[in-house]
Length: 332
Image (cartoon, rainbow, N blue to C red):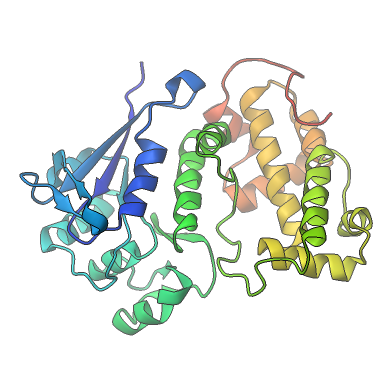
């Protein structure tokens, strides 16, 4: 049996209970019976002798000292209730040592302030909740803040926007380490969206369509697209299905989802191809066709630009080896 993937939750007074809950739900539940790899989640703190207080009367009992970070595959820093809360110096020093070792670090929401205190965001691209961007820029001017994103990575340091974006980042970290199917299984158990890319806007000026009919129409269009990914869909095709002009459709789609129809389509095609590569032994041209890329060359180009790998390398890393052939539910 393979060793479990070791995840450290860095804890100190002032961390947000919500982010602790997200981290615990993603990496702290045993879903091996559903094909998800085994995780070993540990709550790491400078002082393990007493519970760590959190807002609302909650406490967190650490179970490992900071020295355990040297064993971790992934280190997660929750957000803060007071975003200017100073982290204990031993915590900051331990995070710097972990980064120097090459360990992946990830901060949820205001956890970016903790990484910034450690100097780990100086000269690096980062993001936090949209309402905290100016505060982070004021107190840590050397951080290269991205104005709008859900999550972002620079030199193996990940940061995420607020609340739900922390879920997106956690699922993305599962996806890149263990494959799309593992992330989708966890997302289903959490009843949350399995795939939102980091480049999607975190704040949408018009978060809801003008009418309920508009919302139903756009939802129906997305469902139609998912059922017909293997076809050469265009924005004009989707607009026609919605009964809108292409320009009006693109405007309404972006207003509701925070991303363009073309980018959304590409994201769904990549997700479909990943599942096919994990679940089946279909040849590459057939995977490309079913996912809607048209050709293996096009699929390979998008894998390289968006996932920094090739379809063949992805299959080698994440294939279940089930050899299920054409049994995938993805449209034929």
